[in-house]
Image (cartoon, rainbow over all chains, first blue to last red; front, side):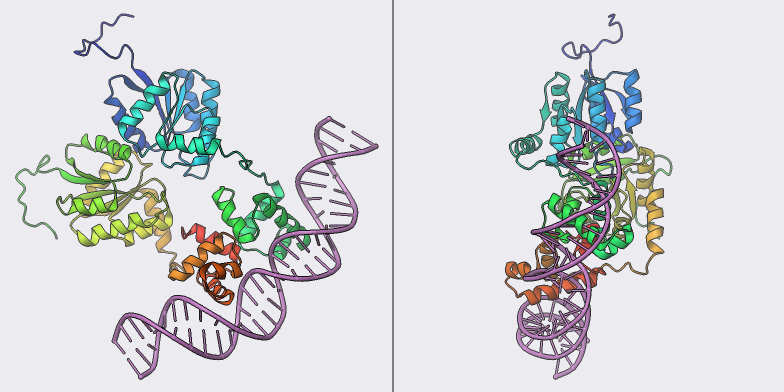
Length: 227
Length: 227
DNA sequence: CGCACCCCTACCCGTCCGGACAGGTCCGGC
DNA sequence: GCCGGACCTGTCCGGACGGGTAGGGGTGCG
């Protein structure tokens, strides 16, 4: 490689900067991250993407060492980011996925790891921590900020009841109506089934959610993003 | 007409840059915004704050023309940002509050305006739009990106039932317990009141929320960020 | 002083809920 | 073919729920 390009006064670092790709659907966030990272001599932002499809398309052409993925569980599609993380880490195993997110969701840290993420950093941290995390994952190590790591540990050692109950198709429908305050009779009418059947489904929902009443069911379902 | 004391020497290029203060509890976001804005010759980031208290304290010393306020309804304290917006716009009327947020919440746009915000921009927009918004509010105009404006219009012309019901202190407590599935009897026991009284409060909650049952109450309360 | 508002309590009553029985039909997989 | 699962239906019953009516207390305001 003929490094005829530029004569840096810095003889030490950057034999080759770490190529980073930014994935976030917010242009301003991407811009901000780019500005922050461009100050680092050994980091180069080599690509950006604002969606799942775009990210995967770009990865066919360029191969960054690190993908900085903003997992915003904001816009309803809670799992979209996780799917993308999984798609990247399976399809491009040489690329390290570093999840950057706004909130610390204990559950989400675990799911991110399962989806192949090599690190999880909450946006709350200072710039230095983010840069450190990028360095870490680029070297094949994992990188979790203190709180994420703690959340992960807590999640790991609490496996007694992690099994997310799976509602059947019908039960999900009933749950929707249940949340809007419909009585069993009304649910039955709406779904063209008898009140008895509606009660049957409601009972199953309560059992699966581990709750003892409709109100609590709505509360739990909300927390688990089932509504 | 606010063209007051200051005599501009140069009508042309930056006689004085627009002083902007950043309020966001995420250091990375602040850093990113600062980087973006520093590229604008006629904008100067003159202060930062990461919390309500800090912001108000800083405003005692410096007087930016624009406060860029990140209203993240993420961390539970949904109204904290709104309170800050209100505090700033009442205590420092010469300061324009420009709300910058991650999500477009129809309700929140209206509340922000009521709280005195002069503009509302979703982070999703490109940098140029943000810069334009800062210019606009600094000139005393209002600035809303297309979607926020649309949301505001929709909200405005739908005033038949916009009156947010206000729950009393006690009712809020009852609502919390209600959502966790407690029965009237249990609520009474927990709050050291009789079951009858618990029923009384629950009834008032249902009436104020305009719903007909506990389940629906939880659903509505969740939607209105009351839990 | 009324008046409004919030908080607390009691009784009645019809409805609904949730659980426990006890069945039935389909369907796909071992 | 048998088994499990999802889906559907019924009956019984004690308790919870929601609405109504009718009071008690306290605070703060004009």
